[in-house]
Every structure is written in structure tokens, then in C-alpha cells.
Image (tube, rainbow, N blue to C red):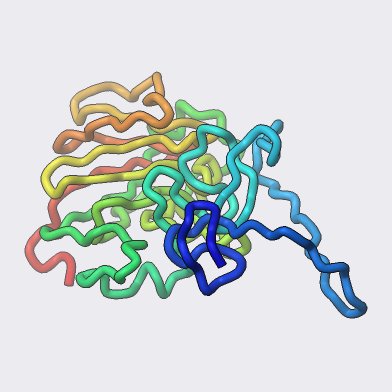
Length: 244
């Protein structure tokens, strides 16, 4: 078959080359025993979410998204780069030193970086969260192995497995923010989260204004990134022997 973009494809659902949905000229009538999929309402979807008429359709799963969405809310397809979503924890854990031929995984980092996830009582005190504050302790240290990483909360039902999982902090959206790097500098970008992404320098007071949605903000050494009800992130080089 030939896809709408002119590529020859062996698959009949999505193009083997570009991933766009193949045009179906005729829908066969349902047969006895056929299973008809029933839409599942997304409890995390904001009111007035886009429909197929006023949004952009994901070429991977066909879900209607907002016209300015950076990622598909259902499967995680990256509208900006055309990167296909990862399919589960195994994909996140695989060796990315040799990216697959389809280029679906961002390039690995040459140097070792980590993100420290802190439970910040001061940040929690400025929020209006109904959730109790967990016990603060040492930070969770997360190795950063790729040049583009998702910050959010995991969802097995929706297949969302963020690189930096903010755990039980319900103030963090499933797909909250994206971290990118050129190997030396780091940027953070809010992906249209419910409660915003905030950045402050190490010596500054707690930030009051979130960064602009969809605009990359450079994160300097020792800068603090605040998300959700109590989560604070700091990006730094890994100490010798800290990450194997």
C-alpha cells in the first residue's frame, strides 16, 4: 500500500516509513464475534479536551490531541520530532549506546549525569495540596542516560513510563516536563502540566511564576526545578562511582 505521504508500506494500519495512518477506503461490516473497541474516558484529561474535529490526530494511535500538543496524551508520540513512544519499562532499561535504526530513542549521553529528587517541605508549604507530606530524607538519585528525558508520573494503563518518575506526588502531571541537553547545558520545558514547572537559582527564594509552556528554559548549575506538591529536582554531574 501507499501511505498519504507517498511511501510504500507493507503494514496496512500505519506507514512503515513515517508512521502516518494509512487511508482506509472501505470499512468492513462487523461480523459475529468481532470485538468493537469502546473508548475509555481518561480521568486525567482536562475539561474541554480536543476532539478529532479541532485537534491533531496522533499518527501512532489515532487519538485526537490539542492542536498545540507536544506529545500524544494517550501513547506519548512526540509530535515535534516524530519519535515513537517507548512501550514499557524494558524499553527504558535497554542499552541505548547503540540506538535502533528507526531512531526512536534519543541519543545517549557521553558523560554521566544524575537528577536528585527531593521532598521539599518549604515548597509543600506554598502549595494547596490535600495530600499529606511524605517524610523528607535523602534525595532519590536518578541516572540521566539520554539527551531527552520525560519528567512525570507512571501510568501502566496508559503506557506512560517517565525517565524521572515523581512517584506519589499527585501534583505532578503524567507528562509534566521534558529535560533536554547538548551534553553540557540543560533545558527544561513544561509540557502543558496542570500545576506548572518552576525554576529558581540556588540562592533565590521559592519561585512564584511558572515557566512558559512549550518554551525551553535553560537550567544552570545548582538551579532548582520545582514540580507538583513537594518535588524538587537538581541536575548535576554524577560523583565518581555513583552510577555504574
